[in-house]
Image (cartoon, rainbow, N blue to C red; front, top):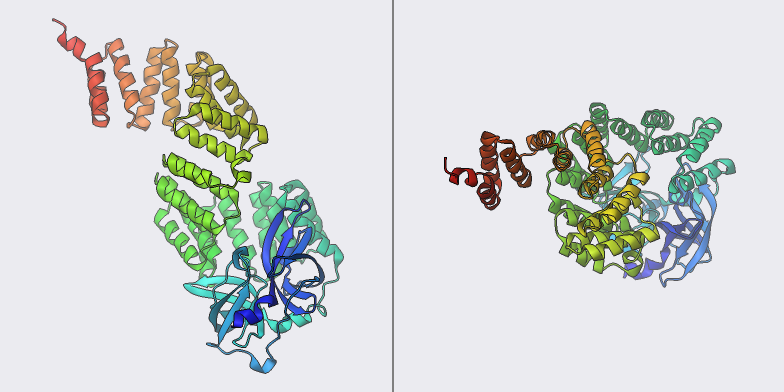
Length: 578
């Protein structure tokens, strides 16, 4: 079999940071004894590179030459591999020729997929081989082979257009890496330091590095690219846009930079301009899933829900791994209140990216929004201990226990999560406060929610729940003050007016409370408990016409509650002798 003959010609490349944490996985081709070719860009910023053999043994690797212009690197490693023979110049493929892609797709191990040459002269310079064999993330750096198992090209990237449409660089380029080696060590140092700073989220240091980069190498598009990334990390989206435009000018035509311009416009909420930029990209690069996804985001931001969904789905038809398109469809489902569809979207992402635990937490969250605590519990029960007993795993186990009506268990899990440092500490404190609130441990609940507000003072949700706990804990003046502030900042939020009204009524300020509750119902009339409360208040205020009207509204929402309210507020006066 062909696979058996060529299997050891491609190894897995794994990159790691300074702490030994994995960064990424790609593929590498054995081109000579202890020499391997892969792409350069996935190696930038890594502190260690290891090659994994078919039997599982891993060995250290080092970069000995870089052809930066073609993004090809030559590695040295004492790994056991079978050198792949290069197809002779006279045996280059024709359109329709059968080919095979040998690579480690998705980090699941080296495998072989079959297709045909679908085009010659691909890419901006017309030098790439276009092929249809399916490839996936991690295939980059893998081998494109002919039917005899000879090397035709190095897999560069993938673009999907209905069927798989992917590209490979000519195999002859691999033999030119040393001759084209980039000897500028200062520039390579910048290329290595930039992704390290981005990984740890040090935007300020990255800004300084990128500015130095563009000062020393003003015509290097990569420097402007990192300057754009740094500006975005700092929230400077105008500066980001300017940097991306510099990158476009210096690269001539650079899809990443053009996408960056459209993305920066989106982040500035300049949706019409973003839509125009994305539409232009789609027109010139219809195979770009990222461009379609950006077009969807631009429509989404300007309220074009149907157009956004169409663009997102087009992006996923081209590339099922396009994360932003998945997130866009999930967001649309959330806007519709369709939490089940949102959960299905997160579930797909978990399957596509099984090594990213944060996606599992978002799936759990979606299941909880869908009130499906049982499914969330089953998902959490299947987690490996290192995730289930980690800070975030404990948090989501607590949230699930709370939904399932187990506040005592939930509070214990939230405390354990906080002791280990969850990724969202303010949220964990608020959820602990809610669990304690259900247990009617009001002083502890208030203390927990105060801690959430201290950590994230600008988050209105934490202040809202603090006000709820203060109200039920008897601190009415402070609850009223917080809700008044929130009602000014968020005048169209019915729950804030509802809580303000309840607090005012408890503080013996019924007229103000009635007005606030009426405001809440004007924003959201589908609140049976608020109509019920108003019936009691209207009766006490002698407002019989309003009492009858409120009863009619309540009856349309909850007939049983309306009957009980009628007997308590309307019937006594009807039964009293005149």
